[in-house]
Length: 402
Ligand SMILES: *Cc1c(COP(=O)(O)O)cnc(C)c1O
Image 1 (cartoon, rainbow, N blue to C red):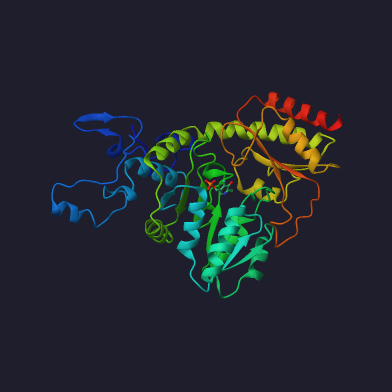
Image 2: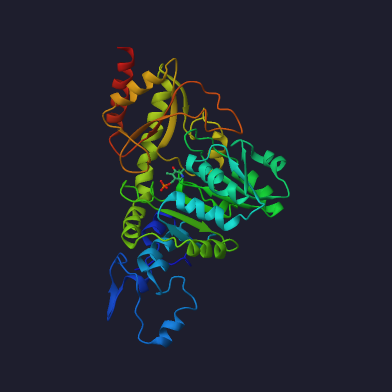
């Protein structure tokens, strides 16, 4: 059986199982029924019977066999599945990384002379794109306090074309007041976009909160196994044609093999996130009790800036959060992280494995000074047994006292 987007009452878990499995993509020629998963179609050239068919294929190239850069049913199935997970969305384009998706979304909306309002807690490569690509093109970026809420109105000028959000923010986890910002943006005809990687559409429905464009680093939870780089941009009907044409002009697409892996990851997203959520919350609460810990920045804990927005707008919390070490410096932090046995040390997150990362922010923030002086550590809580992870953290704390 295949899912259909006409059935609006399906719960997210059901949609995750059924999304993108159109019969035309999973069917076996000459036989009823079909395979469960769309096959991996590796293709550059698409062959036609004759010139007339070749010419006819030009007319509407989206999700039609035309040329490998426009995708095959493997990528279309993933794109449609991501669209189905975001009610109110018109379509999704796929990219070879999350950063490529962010770059394309910004380029689709902005032109020379425009101003962009960018959240101060944005993922660092997003900032770099604004400074090193957009600014030389005559597009200015103004950074705003992640907790600005309706105060965003004071930052809007007649050049403001777009507002970019990331909630919770990278590294420091501030949860934004998205509805307050989108309400003002709608009024003024300003485009809103969000990096929704932390929550995924499962825990935060961006378009349902009136955001125009939702961006995911699918590298993280969608793929979920630390073996794929991918990004996606999902847009409402008004912005979709621009997103689609910009992605085409930049020649962006993900490979069919990667799309197939992402589809496999997507099917278990709800199950994985449930466990990431449970373990991360238990560990965050355990950390909050430790004498060595200063502050715990987990969106589902009241100690996290913007916690009330998380509580109001989100349906869950994923496995990534930060905390600070009280009374300790960089060398103690290094000792702590190096002492961990079950946590890998490395960038990225969203896989099944736990990770730890030292976080240094003072040079990144410009709109609002980061005032926590204690050294920060970011944890991604994976799918290992939670007690094993707590024991591991405990023995690393003991090392600090030796
Ligand atoms: C990792 C990440 C990205 C970039 O994704 P890549 O696939 O690594 O390019 C963007 N935003 C956030 C919040 C991320 O954590």
